[in-house]
Length: 408
Figure 1: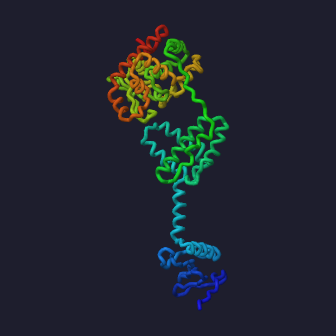
Figure 2: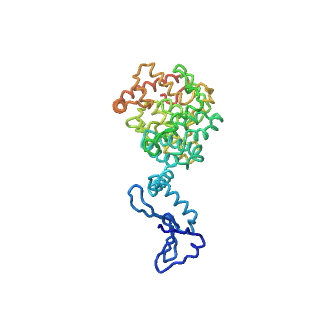
Figure 3: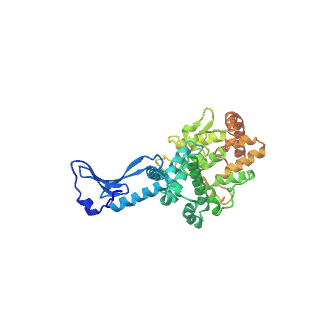
């Protein structure tokens, strides 16, 4: 006849005293309280492992931190799993590991790992910082600390909808793309099984794409005349002509450093970390661009930046919006922006019949064919020099009557 075990009660447990050796108080069905000789009381449960058919002993924690009721509830959970041919110890370890993994893989932490990967890709430091700032401002405060495996498209949509309602359509689009890339990274790293945000961007409104305002080459004389008559600082005028002559982006033009200029070879090498597509960009300088540098030597030759701020300590470049602001004051609002110089130059060079690849490399547009891109960069410098010399003469000719600073 099986021995009948009387269930424990709190009074019995509290009044139990340690003995010379460890001893136990049984509650039945495999649960007992081990009372050690040092006075500590530990809940233990033993069961037959349904997989190995071996007796297994586990601890449920110490009394009174784990109460009698809590120990019994845990015993029933284990017994239920055993009846389903599931090893409780393995089962709960798996749950614990999942919880640990989820805590380590919050959306913010995965995003940070993705950032690190992007640092080795063709993306500039400034671009990466803008990505980080957008997520820190709009996503991390609400969803940053949530496990990425638990996030769905609707979670991000709820956060981004107020931005959409505020008319920040472009911001929403960019952040949606960044979230999608982070989620795709998580899939590739086997952190999540599927990317729930792959089609999220389709939920939001979209702007009709508009080209940046520019003017045709035939309008260049009007532009040059306006520049010559404008009430602007000499340094600002030099910056405008420098950007026009080098057909660079505004941020690249203002951040030019003296150390990047090779006067002997008449080149300007913009390092990869300042370029949009993370590649060194070598620009052959025409005589007009060199003349602009000669003017700036007297203004900023003692500083690091060719176009420093107008006020001391001159340790920062001019604002990238400086040219745009000047063009607006000249009356070109809605007609021309600084970036539009590149479009104007591209049109002029194409109309002159220069090779398409020469123009694209000069504009620092990326050739998706990696092998050809390397070849282009290695062999086009001399040909591009001839093209840039023609462009400098074209700009100077357009300035006749308005007196270009870069002219002879």
